[in-house]
Image (cartoon, rainbow, N blue to C red; front, side):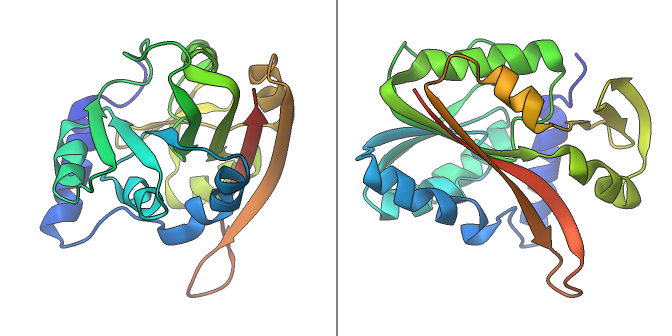
Length: 219
């Protein structure tokens, strides 16, 4: 296994909980997707890599029925304590075949959760998303951009490069950085693809903190 195991993420979420904190980006991710979901009349969607369920709960407040999936049982247990009537949660590894039926969601959303895997697992994951999205459905995501790599290296110097643009960090976490060309290759077979490079600035200094690709793919 070349990505951080469940025990790593369980510990991350327990640490946040002990500090009285939560891994939550606010409206950073869902705010951009809400108008698209509304326009396309989405009803049932999956949040892939949901963490402690904050984006799931935001979406249920807009009337969507949402399933949150995460590899960390600790994260899912915390998410369940916030549960709303339109939310359900599932513990599963997105790097393995998803335990979900074909064409079962109007949309799949994943926010900064799909960039932990090597090329083979990443390709398999994108194929799994295509499998579970209904005809005319949507795939909405944010992933690390290649431009983020030098910024992240300043905060977390990599231990080594496992494969091109796929690195190992000191805490055992792996990170994959995506180019636009690579994303378009992964999204071959989708009817329409829109990609936008997003710069996220630090709240205190206004300096660039992170670069991500925002993707919207139409089945």
